[in-house]
Length: 112
Image (cartoon, rainbow, N blue to C red; front, top):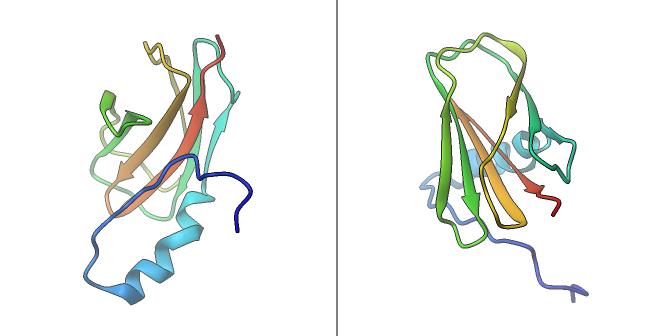
C-alpha cells in the first residue's frame, strides 16, 4: 500500500540468503552523495572497513544502462571521497561503488 511507485528496482541473484540479509540496508546507508541534486559535479563519500586492491564507480540510467565508469585503483580503509563530473543528460541516475567485497549504491539527481 505504497502511495507511489518505487523510483527503481535493484535485483541481484545471490545464493546465500543469510549473507544478503546481513548486507542489505547497512551498506547502502554508508554512501553519501552531495550536492544532490547536482549541476555539473557530485561528491561521493563512503567508508571502507579494510583496504581494497581496486575500486570502481559506475553510473547507470534509470533503465539500467551503464553510462560512465570511473576506475579508482587501490583504496585504503577509512573514509574515501571522490568528485565526479558526469557528462549526462537525463535527470536520475544510480551510482554504484564496487570496492573489493564492498558494494554501495545511491541515487543522484541532475538539475537542469
